[in-house]
Length: 292
Ligand code: NDP
Image (cartoon, rainbow, N blue to C red; front, side, top):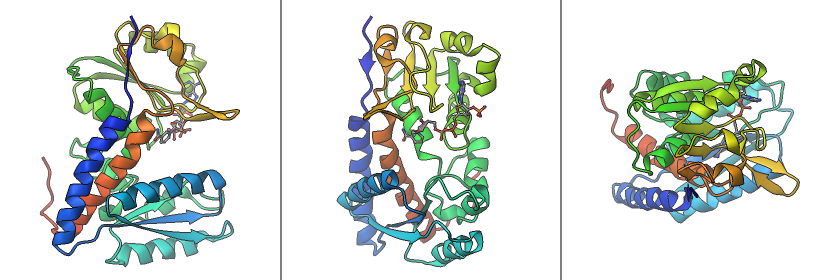
């Protein structure tokens, strides 16, 4: 069986069309969604990503701003900058660009972001809501992985799902989202591999999400016949970008598989902008706490 390739572009286009419409409606109400990225230090690869993000945001009428701080900026200075952005009514969403220099505690900095402006879903409030099954602003890459799975139309209830990777920003949120969709979810990490059990968990997976950052570590022959495979990994190998899954072998067995590049990455920015629209609405029309 040759699998269907799950390109991210058509899903991303659909989300972006919705975002553009919502931005237009917000502007008619006098609300102008605005995104602020805070970046500490310089990294040419980040700059390419930020330029592309800004271009996509501006295409749907969203204003993007950038605060650049030098690599020697102290943690206190960064926290003050975030406080200023938090209190600025003209800014609706904040991205704190990662990685931060090693003298700054990333968690302390991320947790300083006002929950209502947390468009990347990195604060304890956003992640706590996800944990409780009432997400609000959820991590964008995780949303992208799960929405691509949903786009196959497969009924997820009771399915064996394996997530490889347990980062706070991808692996854990994807696992929680799949659990919420009633999958039987297994989370694998480096100690799963050290014990030699990774292959066994991957072979069982009807839904497989891989976010480990290890080029082509998931062997194509491990993929279960008919599985849905979402490869979140993005690894630069020479001048190519490759995923965590051996794509050519895996596609012979999977029912659906995402390519790298062209899979989850394309959808992530669309969800970021969707979160910004949601954040703008929440700030303009605060509602009583929604718990269900
Ligand atoms: P992290 O490095 O934070 O996490 C990697 C996870 O993989 C960890 O939980 C780690 O386990 C696990 N892992 C590493 N090696 C192994 C192994 N040999 N066997 C099993 N598990 C292993 O990465 P991120 O979650 O931030 O990113 C993962 C990948 O996704 C990267 O390639 C990144 O570039 C990509 N990415 C793509 C995005 C997109 O939009 N498509 C956005 C964000 C990231 P342990 O916890 O035990 O160390």
